[in-house]
Image 1 (cartoon, rainbow, N blue to C red):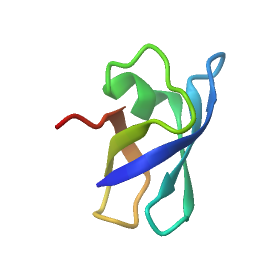
Image 2: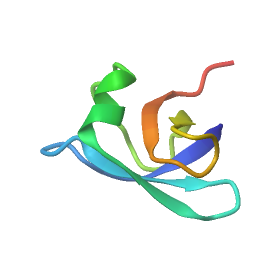
Image 3: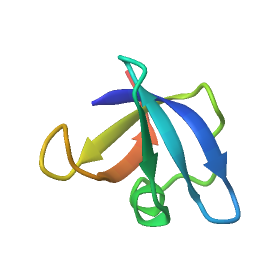
Length: 66
């Protein structure tokens, strides 16, 4: 699933993304760390994975690549 980075706190390595329908969804440090990123800037397109399909917690945040 794709989303857009909305907020990111480097101290806690957590933040939120906006789904394509505009819904904000928060992620924690574990999801950020699973993606192997060092930094995330608002506005970046990201790929996310969610536990339990489209309704669960975010388990992975990584950059969207083509």
